[in-house]
Image (cartoon, rainbow, N blue to C red; front, top):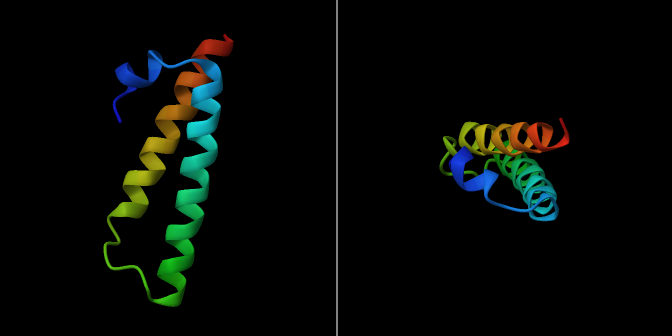
Length: 62
């Protein structure tokens, strides 16, 4: 998801997205550890998405 799209969302929606991405990252790491993850490229993609959400949230609070 692009930062421009994230800036259009409300703060509550961004907080939900942050929780969702953090949970998704946890699940991906768990799958990798148990050998069930097929597409390992999803981990860095999810980390970048989570960072984008956190950045936009920080911009809103400033």
